[in-house]
Length: 435
Image (cartoon, rainbow, N blue to C red):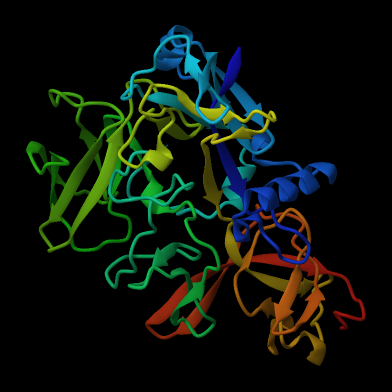
């Protein structure tokens, strides 16, 4: 007999948004989430499982075999089942004991790989990365406490010294979330994010033992030091490097004794121009990562926050059955993947200038010189066409046919000229877009 040890739901905003803009992230009640997913399935809407593959890593094959575990795909993620025997519990509950007792500290990991490149064009992530890291999601607290049922870490704090890309999410001192962008005048702005616990750059921390570190556009660096320490602050290893024109340096920590995979470490970076930063990182096992790796989900059966545990104090899985057959207490974790945020620019498909139209003014900015219209705010990539909204009014305006072709326009003037990525939407002459 197999029963659910835990389930992980990966909700992507792109697929799980309705035409009226309602997104699954706005729902917390289990019944509402189930109904939302059922409606999308009835519409034959594809899901994240079209783009991601879930597999048992080779290093975990013996774990899944020994502990009689099975990996099963679902519409929005996967479940891990355990072979169990029934145990009668008080209050007419039926519990389940694993046929092979599961150690409280046993890591149970699932490797997540990309099936295609679509995910790169529809997801909100930083393209120019300092570290070539992938997502590492766990029920352990790592750098700070988490809120059930979310496996993601808290979004990073806004920083005056950080270099942000359009759409990058950070939090203010009140933990409100905002996405960065440059407006048409070249000014730095932050757009409110209306849901909590999205996947952010804080969750991208899994690295091989050897990797290239990039300083990107940072100027004036000739030497840098890289100091590795554990969570107790104990110094483990130091690397000194000269910085060449590529601003990339190879770091190799394979010779460091005692390095443990899937454990948290800190990499302190200091440069001769005063730049300093600390990265929270996790090392993968050798050969674990590839170009197709999206991330790893690694759960520990028992953790300090019991809401995130997979087993109870008696070693039983948390799933239980009532006398009427209703199943309760199944650990279901969520990963919220936000869509790519970009400006949408509407251009006539024959190169003519679009005429001004007052009904579009609440939603689209008009450029007199080019005769184009651009969304007033960044918009999320969605599988279905969604409404533009302004106060209590709304309007359907065409969605992009593809999110893969990103154009860049210059905004601002003088020394404050910046790149503003956008998607060009070619429209034919119509009542909405007269020429």
